Length: 442
Ligand SMILES: Nc1ncnc2c1ncn2[C@@H]1O[C@H](COP(=O)(O)OP(=O)(O)O)[C@@H](O)[C@H]1O
Ligand SMILES: [Mg+2]
Image 1 (tube, rainbow, N blue to C red):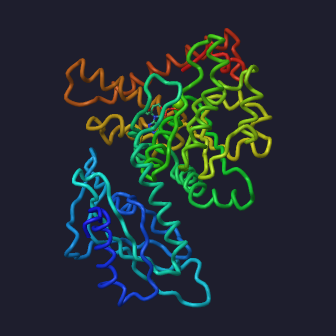
Image 2: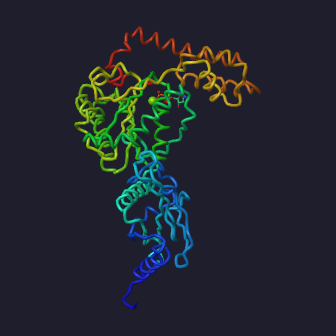
Image 3: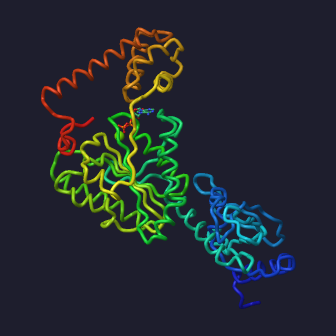
């Protein structure tokens, strides 16, 4: 043994232990070196249990006693267990949704892990798997690697063209007051693309690239929806890239470079090896004459570098009328348009007002809430904030209905005045260049 390195000694002992305790009851088993990502506890917890690996689904893992392997966990700076040593049993069950003639049995895989060096950073990991599951195991390891990498690097949204490089999305799905059917439809669409759609595109030999548009007047919650989807996507282990608005200045230079932001995002997506969500705010601002052709090519997919794991582009616009027929109607350019509406029902108006008034909400406001139907969420929030400011200024213990109504009237007057101003200046709202040249922003 003198010419054996300690590493060989450890893995040999692991292999010998597997042989003596596992092989007798698990014939047809082979032992493989495997990736450290399979012993990432966070990965194991978040692995999609509906996903199939050669007809089998992962059904959880647990440690098992092993006298030669200590159990040591290594946590990252978020407190998540990143790596661990010891012996573990991984359960796999047949995927019932694709049941074939012959019933198949669940089975287990034994995984052993040990530190190679005293510094605790490198590991030797072995897996004893049924020989017949070799390709399934390879697919399982690949999925673990993908998640392992995603959690390592992409727990934040990457920003292109903004003042900060990245941010942590904080909006919860429940905070958004919109028709439940719309929210469910949007989330299902996004989820289905990544979980099922990508493989369909690949089978058809198409680039897995889907494009959605959220359209609605300013302040209806489109940016909020993007933020909540970003949070959801990060939790799924996807990469999220946010392209900040192009409408920063009316400077020509800015326009000629704005398209390059979309290009950069698509390139990052293609090289990420991770399903990627790209959020493109205010698509209309990119459709000015200089770059329109380039943007259309991207939407066609002809200019976009392919991400084999799938790229979903969600763009928003406050001015759908600025997005001309060439984009909206031509098949394949935008796969789906979601209209994000103003507050539609009295119930939604009540919910919105409740959310932004907090403890100052009183059931007697219900009647007044009816007046708010037809306005965007942002307007109702402003009404609430304005009213709360009055309460604070006057040091009132509760919010009188009159203060709330006054706040509404004051803000409504502001909007009416602005609309009149715009009409007088004859800035037709249907003029695409108005939004594209950045003169009027909200
Ligand atoms: N549907 C909504 N539900 C809850 N709050 C909303 C909603 N719409 C707008 N708001 C409030 O108004 C703010 C601005 O909305 P935002 O998402 O930026 O609108 P948009 O992107 O459609 O212009 C939000 O941060 C939120 O405080
Ligand atoms: Mg917005």
